[in-house]
Length: 318
Image (tube, rainbow, N blue to C red):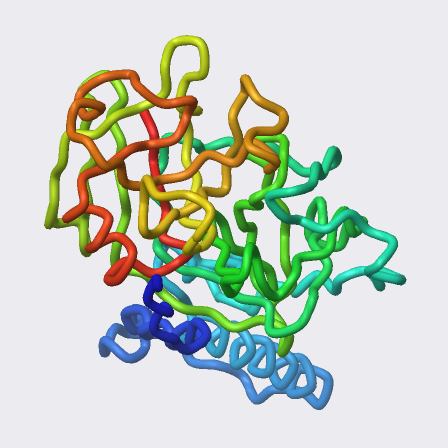
């Protein structure tokens, strides 16, 4: 079965920015001559006190200046003198979702019509994954309406969804539902766990090639079969959704469904038209458009992907 991804801690709080350079000294401290001052009156003393208090406030702000770029999860506020201070960005509270059973389930069997479309389908995700320990609402945007419920498992495997964007208190994740490229926002709370996968899978359809990367370094490359012109393998970024064994077929000991679907078949073999990665008993399919949309891979590639690579690992298909 596919390896469970290692857990990681939540993102640590930003470090305190270093103090800026000390302000230049005034003329009196450099020893330059000054005019004699008359003894201040009571009102003048009150004005001087107010000015000193204002100077202390200004100095405090100046000494807590941040660098030119703010740390993730903070907001940079300009202060007099050209510096900045960093403050924690406000966290948008999630809307109460109501009865989750009344929302569409975000799974390979369903459609989430209101899901935002992935705008970076050729970009490599960070490798962060999110797992709901209980069903959680998925939102159109932080603070927006709930559009789906994410289950704890998908096709018998724990749900692990790749994170494609973050803001304080929220993760934007890929969904396995139709339409292809569906995403949603999940609140970062006690109902979710996070993990990191060091892997990514890249499939070049024109070259009939699958590459496996670990921490950015290629660790495997294979010639594979892809979808025929009448049922092409869908492009874009998706992820390993599950790892299943199906005793009703003999072409592959393990099937790895992806979080994407055929654009040709609404259903296939009694299922929802989910695209997957799997083996094939004969090598003549490799290097050719030979399938109905799935990626057919050699036995040694299937062994590595189904044992070493965690569920939730991003898959980029070009």
